[in-house]
Image 1 (cartoon, rainbow, N blue to C red):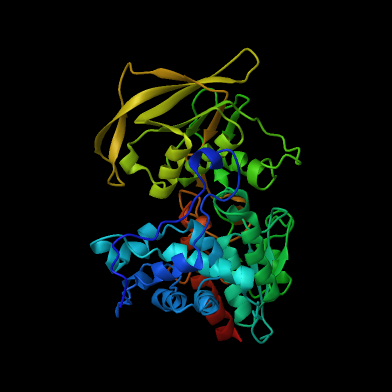
Image 2: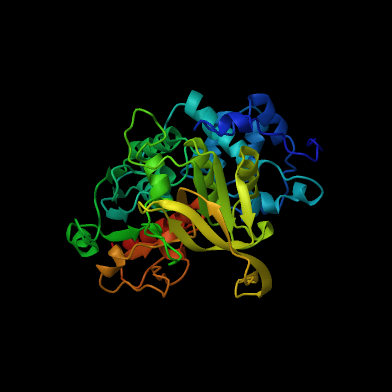
Length: 463
């Protein structure tokens, strides 16, 4: 009989006043007893609405049943049937909007903690399991994958399992994409990401770093080298700015640069001499997960006061509720319904304050959210020595601008024809943020899976 407890098993966490001073993981993970208890809450519905909410189609009731029975390795194997990165997804996937949103237990209580259980099974395997992964029987065909982020890694892993010889070309010196440079250590430990990448290498996936496609090689040259299809998963790494006065001052960062210096360049570790301002008073502009990551990171770098500046209300914030809750617990100050109009500097050209204006919600805009409207004469200043702009990113135009026949829309995103993820250039497929604009890890992975299946059909049809 299922456990009828309407509440999720709580996740153990570091205390807020402790964790906001270190980069150790905030959530500590379930014990075996906690995991079995939470797994017992699953009703094992016949129509499995949770599975329909998962972009990669994880067999959710099956892996949860294995945990309830104490077969943790079996749970992991079930996850790996459809999910190349379960330890990552268990930590950063927005389950509340996807699988858990569809959970029947959520109608009269809290849904089953699917993400927490996914993390448990993946972590248990990393500690106790034996890796038996191998690539499929070689089929003699070669595929190139551009970008080693979630979409690219997923596409590469699925193709390798089908027997393809896959080479991933990554522009940075480390594979992982946003998993490595964007999401902070306290939310997603880099050792976890590296283990997932190492697993893909064991499946036969080759990864070449420091390979900027469009500079070192073009897509056309990849075809000339014998690759029969190319997948583009280059993400959305071009930061957006507001174009307000003062954005060129010393101490203004894009969230991309700020987080990359901390995560990829290891500014959070004292033995690394990474160039970065260690601010005392910070304003982070934006209301998404990246803004929460930047704000919480600034605290851990020693900032005394960190402000979130967001032009809408808290209810309209795109950030996960969990991330907003954690930021508040850790001491981040939320300045809602206000928008920056100017960043002011001192005599040395360094940030001294940010001037904002109060907003009120007017009529709904195209997204359906009420449009924020400035209130005349309500300007005010916040003294800061650092401003981080976290207002979204766009795809870098390098690959599409150097590839003939590859169309993009007005936002700079690569155009795909349909769910096959085929682009307007024959043999070239794309998915993830390069297609959708900045979105979630799991949606990028779902697109990578769709592309892998389409690439297989394309190549086999030509064989």
